Every structure is written in C-alpha cells, then in structure tokens.
Length: 113
Length: 113
DNA sequence: AAATAATATTCCTATATCGGAATATGTCAA
DNA sequence: TTGACATATTCCGATATAGGAATATTATTT
Image (cartoon, rainbow over all chains, first blue to last red; front, top):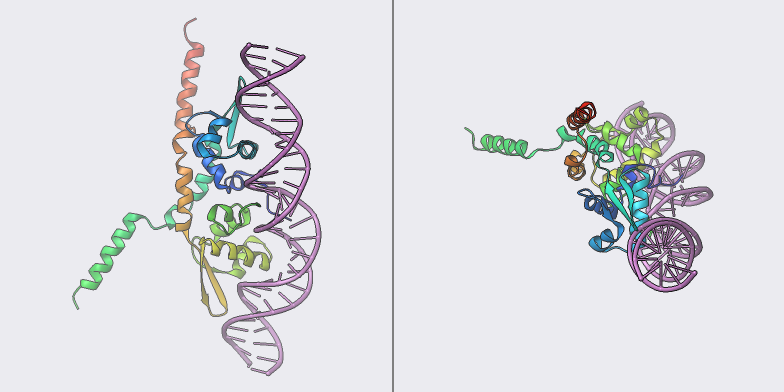
C-alpha cells in the first residue's frame, strides 16, 4: 500500500503547506482563483489543483459567479482537527505553569540550607 | 517534485491515522513498543516505523529502560497545529450561533404577512 | 462566430510512501 | 556463550504525489 491520498481526508489535505496558505487566505471571504494566484504567487494550474484537493475533502466551497469561480474556506471542516489537537492541551506546558515551576525551583534553590 | 516526506514536519507525520492513534496512546505516560503493538493491534515492525517518523519530527520522545524503549508523546510539538486550526475558530459555526440563527429564521417565517 | 478571459485538466517524471516478510541489532539472563 | 526477549532495519512492490509545460474547457463580450 502507498501513502493515503491527499483527498482521503482533511489531515492529508493540509499536509501540503501551500494548501494551508490557501485556506488561510480564503477564510475571511470568498475569492476567485486569480486572486489566490496573485496573492500567494503560485502558478494558476497549481492553484486549481490544490483547490480540487481542498474541495474534495470539503475544506473549501465554491460557487460560480459569471466567469469567475469563488472559493471560500469551509471552517467547519477544520474543527475536527482543532478538536483532535485540543485533546493534548492539558499535556503541553502552559506559560503560566512554567512561570510557577521556575518560581518553585528558585525557591528551593534559595531556601534554608 | 513528489509529496513532502512524512518526516518533513508534524503536519505530514499526523496525516497517517495510525500515527495519530499512537500519539493519543502515548500522551498519558510513556510505554514500551510492545504495549503499542498490543493495544493498537499493529505489527511490531509497523509500530517501529511509525515511531521513527514521529520521533524525527519531534512528536514523541524516547528513553531506554533496560531492554525496553519507552516512548512518550511530546505534546508541545502538537501545539503549533492546535494554534493553526484555532485561527479558524471564529469562522466556524458555533452551536449557540446556529440556535440564534434558527430562531431568527423561524421568526421571519412566522412573522406578520 | 470569434476573440478573450478565467479556470481546469492532462501528460510527464522523480520521489516517497505503507504494508508484508524476513532479518538484523541490541540487551538481559542463565 | 547461548538463548530468549525487545526493537529496528532492509528489501520489495504498488501507488499517489507535486511541479512544469502544454492544452482543454467554460463563460463572456463584441
């Protein structure tokens, strides 16, 4: 078996950095393909290909408007990945926790011999 | 160019579902390889290979203990992905927002003719 | 209909993958 | 040292990729 298709799920789709850039660019409001080409300095065919992947996994939505096609990030499709990463939240070191730890370390070190 | 290596960054590493399972399994406390094999019902060589990828991108840490090697998820390496997905938070539809929208829709529909 | 604009697809190639099977490496115990 | 246990690596094959270049498709205007 080979690696899973980029179109198999959002995790595979966002593994490509340019696709993450596109998602960030399209989240505020819908844009035609040409805007992405200019803003991200990518070749037009490349953008179309990335958009196809993103659309297949539901990460972007498209509607036609005259001769343009307007793409927009579907943030809802990102939420499950947010929730998965959030699962680990209590295990990473929060800034506040580090401050507290450092304070305790210092106290121990400077404490009565 | 081909697809980026799974070892090129955490996003590529977690594209593989088994690796996500491994990360979830190793987050609470460190475990030897054999435990992963049993818990996730994977072949041992497969687990070793996945662990290599995860280790190369910093998603797990390892320490030797006798003839065992104890692996543990490094949650800090997941945080950047959490933060990236969180960027989209204000664009996905919150449950509360939906309730409000639905209420307004209903009000419009049932309003005075 | 023809020209133009906007976007999508196809063909190509180099590369990295995952699983399976077999085997290698490393560590402890007797 | 030999054996048993624990983990890692190698070799294989099928498959999917991303970029580049060229071209096809679809829609609009004149």
